[in-house]
Image (cartoon, rainbow, N blue to C red; front, side):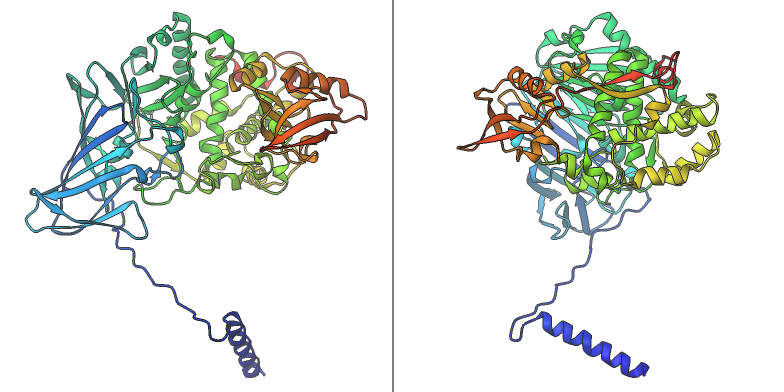
Length: 638
């Protein structure tokens, strides 16, 4: 019987395979490939790479690179262009911008072959007797936003060493010595974490290893100023217009308090020196990118000069500074890699980015960079956003940690349903919940500050990396307050619940409500974004011309058939304006009459009935009870 059953299964399998290929059709088999790129080993690379960068062609955005690389021996060698970039959590190295690559040894050309599978790799055959090879190429940076981030303008340069260097395969990057020299335009200054000797326009940076070099970007410009915040931390600011450098003593004092509050919160410093690199520009591409001993921060004009107009992007520096502890020093074990070819896995980004987002808002309030009330108002907007997104019904928080690889921050049409990198702000909500539970279960004697010191405040002065797993996170929480933290975290990361996890705010003394008047922070956000945010008043956001930039899945605008391709050109027969749209929403409140809209898509017009009758609704927080709650204590300066 067994023999007969086996024969029947084999016959069925063969019949199924035959059925998949019609008789007479060709049926090729895949060509196998062999990975000939050496795996990274934790052994010293013999010799020091000399990297020279000419960054003077600011009109055309061209970096010219010459690199002298010692060779361990004659024969096969592979050079790599950085692919998986720390902070990007994805393979976003701009290999397409590397051009003109010529490799020589002893003045003779050495031909290279690009790897057919990993196109970031170049294979060469080192001739006998060669001690070094020379690689020359250009990095042709973006000159228009549709080519990528603009990193070079006539007044400023954002130099990221990963874009202007190759490195030898087969070694941990921390084991590859390198020294970089950069020539900038005459009269410019430059700032970065690696010290340099300056001779005219040429900066010769101290020798370091390749991992540290890649983690040490440089901001240079025609107009710059440096404010020492503490003996170990500097605020380096460059601007297109020198008038943007007019910071007041009170503004600089807020940045000083940011550093002081962060050190008090985490209880250690994981840098020998730290450089804030802040660009105030509408020409250079925007950025917010963490590094261990520096951060790249890009804001539009008005950071200092329009300080009183609202919080603007002042959350950026608290967030990126927190990353020195969370993400750079403590790093998810599956995200740390020995080189920039090994794929990074982001399963712990809800700690790396989510808790950094949490601390960024806390530190902005503790330092006074942003007022407590504006911080509360920003929390309300975050809470309301996630509470109104139905995507949690099908896609859990943990899966969003794959988004850096899935979408690489490309635009999405339905973020409220597709989800995006929600581990940032939904992660913030989870960590607020953790704080409230620590307070509740300890009778108010413990909080997330205790977790911060226990998890991030170890090994003062160490600016290597200490990796962790989710079990380590749960174990640290258990040291503070014994409980089933592993089970709790698993639930929060994998649940498919309606609404967002808002209990942490309620336990900590505030609840989310909606009123018909926006908070000052909300209004400032609309002004900055040049939009009208009616997410909770019809389910859409529109730009100044009525073009839709967001439509909430299953909301009233969605039910009316609206999408991002649409532009509202008229409201009840009159030309679009934000005030007219809001007035129509107010008039329709409590009625059964839809709001008539005229909508344009391309050259076609159509009439749309927006069946929404809830009036204007804007999120804000309302205090629960009297006296200071957990959130009040959390936001208070240390």
